[in-house]
Length: 114
Image (cartoon, rainbow, N blue to C red; front, side, top):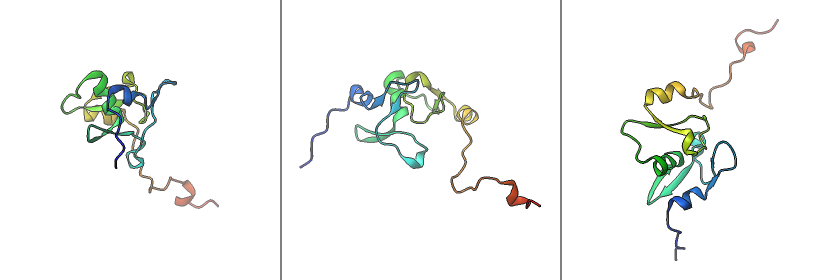
């Protein structure tokens, strides 16, 4: 027998947010492969928490737009830190992605110390 889940309302979403700091941090599930973005199941669909936070407070995300964290914190869902921007703007503002498999550059690996 399945345990009934509470109704999914904006209040239940915001109850899983730590609002004590400058950034409002998502306390629910996160997906490590998505660099710390929160995940939430909302009415049968899995959403990135920041996208859902934007839609709950600002309305639908405009077509061909992405949600940018102006604070650069991917766990943040504070509406004033989320902005709908084009892919190009999001890439220009973003932190460059560096794969975990790439080894950090070390000068001695290229030229041995004498």
